[in-house]
Image (cartoon, rainbow, N blue to C red; front, top):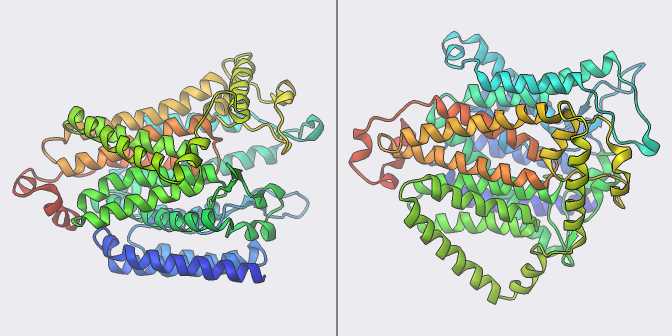
Length: 515
């Protein structure tokens, strides 16, 4: 308990400083009432999580506060994204009499039940708002993917290849979890963000949460102390949750994301959102400070996927925007200059050691896994192989798992090329909607076009990053969030042309946000 108290003091101290420094920036994108309420809820739930001996006491404290905050917040989706990793996503099975438990509970599902579901119910009761959100092709593709998840039973990877038989309870569980974990999140994001102000508020709130995580990640990296693993030791049954991941002799920060790879992906997406938000910041110090804070979090996570994803997002943002060639060359020069400075600094040798090199065990493992995994998946090309573990047994790691560090491979193995088609086409269709709308608005509403470019670039980065990570934790959640944001963006209202012709974009930003 003493370790938890020390961790709580550190977390609250760092978070207080970040919220204080970020307030002038946040006030440009959200109301003072929402900012204050969200900050209070974040602090209370963080304290409850770090001090609660089990998840049930945390839930008793969190449920009424989440319901209260969600009911009073002008944008429940933004609240969800801020609190998505207020505590680590540790799963604990809900006990049932005569059963091992219908579903497990974690912070994602707690937020879905207490924040998103009530918000959707209020939305459905308002005929005017409900008419604006239409059922479209993306809904069809996602529901088709859900049908495959319900129909095709994939037994878990258990010792000695034991197969747990399917049952009516398992089918009911899969239906419930698909709607709770996937469709509910996508539906909420795509339907509830019906104004430009709400969408910008959502992006800014997510960046605010990741800014706090970035500061905590830098502390974990420099002090070699993971602040949230004590929660995993008290709440969860997974012994791997308390392990310290190392790279190059240094601890990889994970904060409350559950894993350093997930942390790197979250911060990368926040960096993509910040590329738009920084166009509204007049102060160069604020823009540089925000970028340095997020990149500090990326280096704290020591996630090469996050580094690559952020670079892809940056150049995709440039390439999809106006004056692509000149800005691309300038961006490449900036990146080259920064890389040169880092290479000449004391951190240079450490970073070079972390870059991928041919022959490294981790990279050889991923290569073998990709080759063998796709061979097994294509043995049943249409609907996959729901029990591939015996054929991949020689790829089992020291942790006792076959680590499918490739989301595309994971989908293809479980649901075949049919499932991969639904999965990929759903996301690509959202990206296409996003890109076409941004191009359409490039002349009439450059601010809204820039917002779409930021979302598109973040989606491109997501497609690159999930190639080298499993489809779990924040990776899965942000995949559905980005798809929902693309749909919501495609239906946002336009700003009259005359409002943007008077002054440059950054000077007119405050007026835009107030409309």
